[in-house]
Length: 87
Image 1 (tube, rainbow, N blue to C red):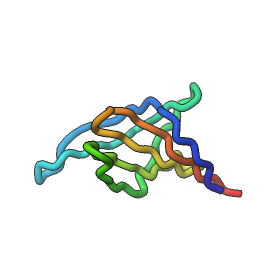
Image 2: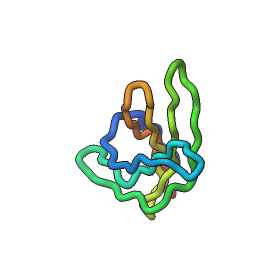
Image 3: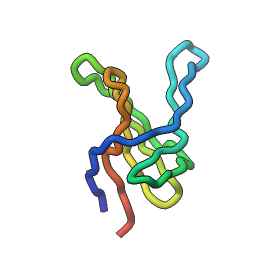
């Protein structure tokens, strides 16, 4: 079951560069509703241009659920977009 959330979250992320010189973002954990979720795996990433901003999307898992989070380069805001749970 997919639940749409679309709420701001706090994220611990590593910002770096790949070998070709491109920018790379790796979220490690996020906090939502006073609970911290450790990201075990990034399952998929994609980027959309929305107005002047690039929005980086990440499909991540904590080992139990699948979460879609995003980072807006213009506003520098992270959001929890949706949660997919079994059942």
